[in-house]
Image 1 (cartoon, rainbow, N blue to C red):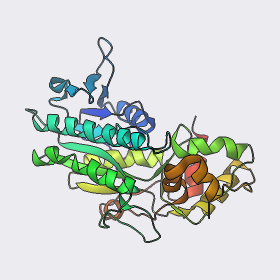
Image 2: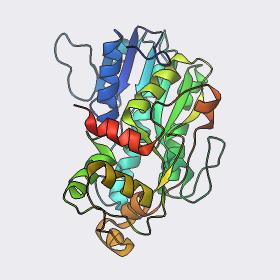
Image 3: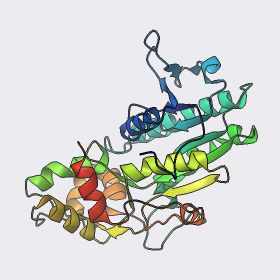
Image 4: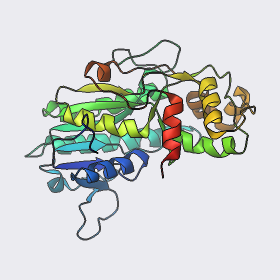
Length: 309
């Protein structure tokens, strides 16, 4: 049945990063609701398809095909967890987000018929790390991810200046067996090699992929929403709590810890930032606007996402 909170009042949506974990689920969601979905792809579109060609590296984009779309969801960007954060890797991560965002937003700003809303990806990395609870009103942190997220959001300014409603989707750890952090954890946990990482005290602010899709659709439909939205479930957990819960759901013991020195040896700065540090985040904005999560319990969310076909 259609979600009463997230039924979009639109006929067409353009999605960048449509072949990624979140993008694929959004394509399926809107297609099921009879919304025309147009994917922004770097490869040449197949004849007769609704796909739109773009190449941020060369500054090329099919602007005519964007004209008249109701909403744009911008997710494209190089994975931050694919490899160690060398200077070259950091530059590639940054360029993949800023170059594409600037190209897309400047193009949208010049359209004759502009979209009503742009949902642009960001992350809770905006807040840095620590133990203090963060909401959308909290200041930016001072590490690589915080600087990246801040610049990423600022790159949407041309769209905002053109009167397009822009929502910055600050996403937490997305739970899905199809990809992302959870998918990488499943094999070692199933082999009884799961355990806490580092001290286990670092906070993990998470969201089920199912609810993340609902948040995106809700933000599109809710004309009063603009600016940052923390896309996280209401209750963050520690890594120790996450580990215990995942082990319980899978029916596996969790007695194989991954010590902090080993994490830093294997993964360097990337491992320290993504695995050994964290921050508790809540979404004051979604709560204020009446969004209701379907999965507020970590165990409930894990059981649902792991049982999906």
